[in-house]
Image (cartoon, rainbow, N blue to C red; front, side):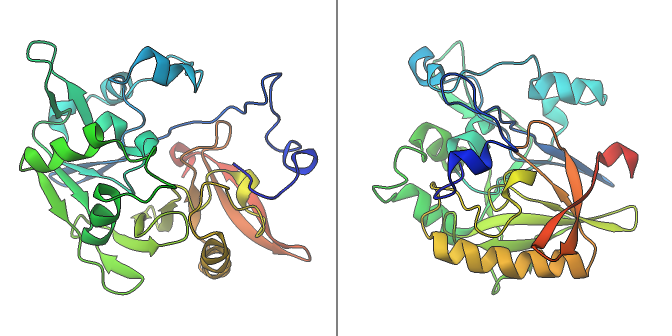
Length: 265
């Protein structure tokens, strides 16, 4: 998760257990905007084999259904599912196995599913490095359902048509999408895998998973500079402790500012 950064350094913010594993979240975001109810990413889902899940030591009681119910919603209420990218821990919950037929079907039957053409092409014809992260059972059924929609990429940012803008990043995987959402007078950016956690804010902290780490370094630098300048709030998908934070400029570079939750805004 921290690439070339030594464990003696990164373990100060993300300590590992005796099996050298760290605790991470798969935090999704629900955006209610008028008649539209958009779910950003869907987590890992529950349809994979016991052997598959044994590699990740899943724990905790949170599920998408419980989280939606706590807000008074059901998965059938979701109008749009926005997938930042198609790695299994971000889109696995988008598809479920029908218990009666054994077929893979959309977990959100009334929703459009949003990706972009460049990333879809990248994910459906995967390179050897990412093949294990792009699982066909998470991807192909979306297209077969007829619910797939594409957001047009126009340079490094575009309007999504869903009520928020999208930033495109190519270092982690090709054309990963970061939603940039107006909320209570602030701009909240859903970080996906550009900054998985607060521990990844320092510039050199780039994941070994990234297909183009030097490009990630450039993208992070530009992003952090803009986020500080425009006072964005960052929403962390994988940080098990910190939901959101601001950023500040220090002598050592950009660092975490105020840690907060969306409910506090």
